Image (cartoon, rainbow over all chains, first blue to last red; front, top):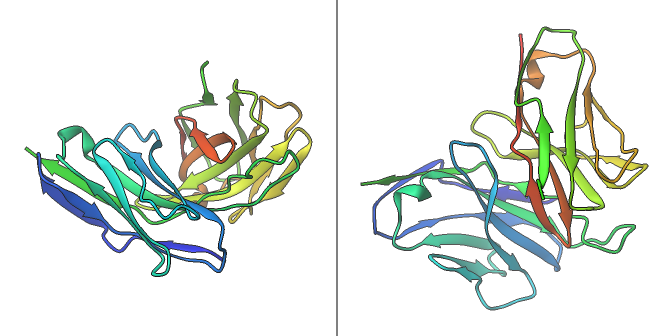
Length: 121
Length: 110
C-alpha cells in the first residue's frame, strides 16, 4: 500500500521570502502522479502543481515549483516570493496510474497529513 | 459550469440518525469520489465510482453507502450516525487524473 508523509505540521515564512514544504512517499509502483493541494480557510481544495513520475523535469507553476527525487521518493514544494494569500494548509498527494473501465486514470488520491503554512507580513 | 456541488454545507445529526449527502457534477465526468477529512488531517477515500451503476470501496467505507444511478449524481448515505463520523466530507470528480473538488459538507454527530 502507498503512504504519504508530511513531517512538518506547521511552517511560517515572512512575506516575499521563500519556503519549502517537505513530502515523502512510499510505493512499489513505477508509474504514478504526485500533487500538491492548497486548502485555505474556506476549505476549498485547490490544485497547486502536478508531477508525472515518468518526467525527470521538475514541474513549475509561476511561484510554485517542486523538487522531485524519484529514487529518494521525495517531493518537496518550493514557494517563492511568498504572499499573504499563500497562507493555507498544504497537502501532498499520490495517485497510482491505473486505468479503469473507461480507459482514463481512475484518480484515487492518497493524501499526507498536511502542513499548515502561515505567511507573516 | 458549476463544477462539483454539494449539499448541505453544514449539518448536525444526533447519534443513530441517518442522512444523505448530495453531490452533483456537470462536467460529464465518469469518475467520482467521496473523501472525509478529520480535523488537522488529510483526506481519506470512502467510496468511488467509475461510472453509472459501478461503485467500489475506498480506504474507510464502514458506516457509509453510495449509489450511482446517473453520471451527474453520486450521493453518500450515512446510516446510524456515530460520533466517529464527525468530519468534513468532500465529493470530487475527475477526468484524466485531475480531480475537481466540491466545497465540502461539515457534519457533526452528537
